[in-house]
Image 1 (cartoon, one colour):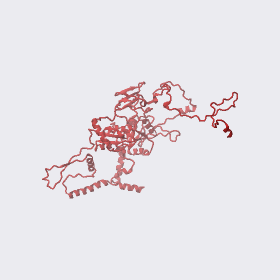
Image 2: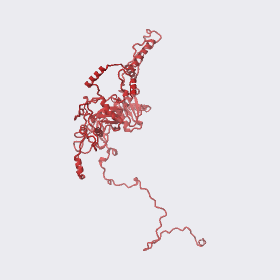
Image 3: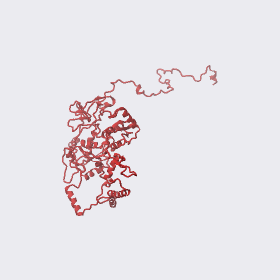
Image 4: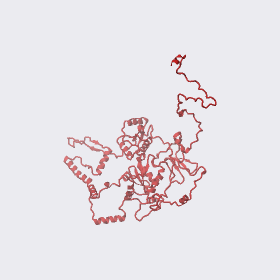
Length: 566
């Protein structure tokens, strides 16, 4: 330190040299270059907006079959009624009419559609994409340039000896490598399957009640089913149902969502397009029978749709001035509807069997009805509104706040008949002769109340008095007599006893006539229009507790006998 103090201008922190010394030529072991004091930072890649734009022709053109034109473009082409767009082949065409967009192929039994049950019954006004067929082309548009792989001798012999199995020629039991194929049936004793072409020939004779129970009971808790959702019965489901029929005689169809509003429509299209028969229905589940003489090999084969075509443009459901209203009146109804309480809340993918009936009953009390659809997709509750407009019928006012607001319209008529007016004069202290000139008061009951009274009278639960001026004692006597009669009619059954010989004889005659078993449904009706009643399908055939007891026996006796047997 003493030496440093003697130096002039001592600097203990001298700076590094500006330029490092160069290594001498021919001397590789010269002084090495020191590393930088701060490491070089690694910057992230530039953002997409900061990247240089590539020329438009840099990427190869995309295949038009993999591009949805209606999503990324504003394609809009108005259509005319009954317009037919023919493909370059000439035989295949696209039809646009009252049933929406349909596809006509040569040799097809009917016009193909994407959805047969959920297509709106309104003529479309425009297309969202160019009209083309969503099926595979009949021939290859280019010559074959590849080469098929060579097969070994064993594979060629195996292909030649492949046995063809169908419902009429099932594989032998215990054969390995072959899946089970369901045989035709069921058949009564002494009858055998027959080759059928038409629907009536394939279905065969009508099923009996015990046959329906035998067919449906194994599949009540089975999860092998066809799921039918918001699109309804689609074209590709037809082939799927036939695949189910190959392994079993009954196909279970589980319906959820918008199509359950009109289950009769679903059953109608299932029978019309597949050729089967709905033998049982409970809730949103339908059991479809293939027929007694069904053969999978001779089934109708349909081409498969390769993609979902874009739905055409339909007229708007909500109008500023709906039918029968002005803009001011429609605005007042919409303001009143904002304060209205919904009659129900619909869940997503639910079962809406009673929705139409609930809306009709609500219109008996109020001209406006609102249904809460919060949590559902916008297309779902709009389809619900379109169905309610057609089935109720009603006038749609708005879909605001995910709620359907409906007005019953000016031409609305009550479901119940007009009630008769009952003129009941008030009794006074004066004699009747003096008050005969007084005006009586008219009491009018509601239509729903009159229907309940009528039902009670028919079921012997109410009594209609012909005389009005009864004393209290006479009225009490009438009530006591009616109470005994109503209890006897409700809790007892008429006793009817037959001797053993007569019972045996009658049963033998019934078995010979073939009238012992009842037909649950008839196949191949000539009318062509069948009504699907919920009472016929929803009646539970598999709960013994719901069966009516025999004559002369109470329901309690039946339960006691069942417990004693167990």
